[in-house]
Image 1: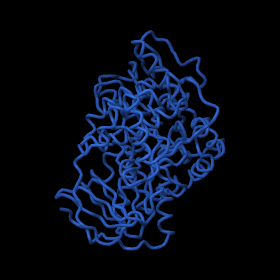
Image 2: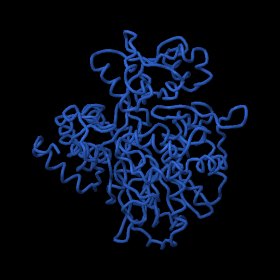
Image 3: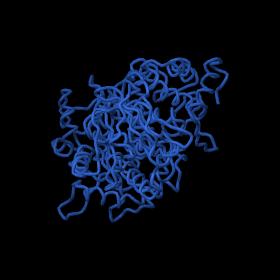
Length: 514
């Protein structure tokens, strides 16, 4: 049976406690809100693991227009230019809001921001906090601010399992707590649940993040967009650690180079070299590994003894793997790092379901297009978290939903059956046979009611969207369709529409190649 949390009845509920969720809660103050987080506040979030920082045009030689141009180039034709222009223009305001919330960004001796360079950026514009520990420092400051805000109630150790709806939209959130099911009656939910890295065996994300927000929204009938675009970070530390440790692009921004086992700098002839867009670098590294080679990041000349000072977190991760990065090559490989697709939202974070907002990686705003520009993720999380909060405050007061009846609690999700399928068939390089094999394997899991159902739904969405994109664009690379089509298509579908296509594909595996 489900306990009904009447004391929280009618409050806006925020699911997730990474950067987007924390910023939404602070933007809503002093309106009472509830944050639901399955771990401790701010823990087990991709935001807290971010090394690179936040992209913002703060340099004297920079502008929002230049930042936008780099974003659109990296997005490979699929960005929404209006959405992207608005978000990058708000970057300085987002940095200022974070500073007011207690974040201390790294500064130079003259008090200006210390700006880093990352892949596909034409200027130094990445703002850091505590060097390569940016995400942890930002989240830590926001957690302190949230705890000090009386209007925010935090339910730690509670996992969102289902969004409840009626003909008018959202009516509540069904959660699993320490003592069983808990229902939170509400007309306003903000999903800020992070990405899908936990669907893959090689990931830099928390392994428990399998796309819960996408699943919750999809089951509630929301429209999803661009689900096929999964970004593989080119340089995860190749070790036995799970999830894999990230070796930030900022290391390459400081001059480190990629070499193979023969010492050949294989990116030297590529436009942008080591700082080419992530999809380009990831495919190049994958090609080296596919032929049986090995790939290393060489920071010995560029950084040497400065490595530990400039990148203390990465240095510690390397030493954990037995590597002295100042004197030894760092073995690297691509790993899932970010998902450009997600729940389709407008400029305020509204989904197609009334009363449901989505912010951060779980959303697809149109900022990232086919391939996210480095360090635009934390920017989007901060800006869209604030926008969602402001939109809720500006809207009419939500009616108090009728007290919910008891609902059965779905089983605990388990992605262990899904990971091998997704890792094998939906990796850096794809083709029709692999994609259709994924659809056929995932469909029965997604349509079932077992532990694999929820993660299988998200994986199936990725597979079906991938089957429909018969081209190579951005992070979606197909060996059977290596060229880019002239027409640019941004696709959006519901779960019901996706399942219909999946059933047809599974029945006739090669009948549908477009």
